[in-house]
Amino acid sequence: MDAIATDTVSKTVYVTRTGLPLSFSFEWPFRHATSGADFEVLHAVITLENSGGLRALVAVNLSATLREVLPSLEPKDTEAPVINALRKEVDNKQIEFVKSGKLVPLPFSSRHYSFKLKQWVFGKASDEEIARTIERKVYWQKRIVGGNVELGDPTEALYLDTSLDHMAEIAAGLAKKGLFTMAGRAAVALPALMDQRERFESEMAVAMRQLEEKHAFERG
Image (cartoon, rainbow, N blue to C red):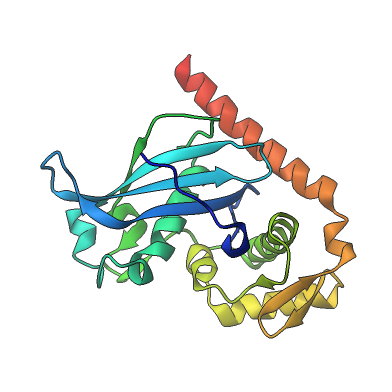
């Protein structure tokens, strides 16, 4: 797989529910599998930020069943659910981060979609989990990229199974605690949040250790 450049200025950091800061690069568009199998493939690089270069190279395999519910294979219709499906795989400890590695196939299938409800399903988050995700999002985005942090990202609301309005309500409560100020739906991080480096790095370290232990056990 060819290297995919990541523009730091436009980089968006997405955190897992366990506290790992990730960024994603995609080799658009989806392409039909060359093996003749009935699925589409999208190559991606998942970078574990603040890790000294750990990453995972993945081939997202879109099943024919799920393809039928997508309006198109364009990024506007697929990027958000793909990012969240990959985040969910990290949450479930299915992805290993290494300095270099081989391309790993990952299914993008109906397990992330409810045909009954006709919507994506990545797991309902409690208000406490949403607040924790927002705090981590603002901290890591500010630290890694800088600038204001956009909290009106539909990808985040989809991942947490909530609405942007509800996320805004919870963000407003965190702003009242002095963690950041709000300019529309963009957060401006304050020292009260950024000075909690030890907390966020500790959460990341615990999540990384659990991930590494799981893969070490599987390797025997």
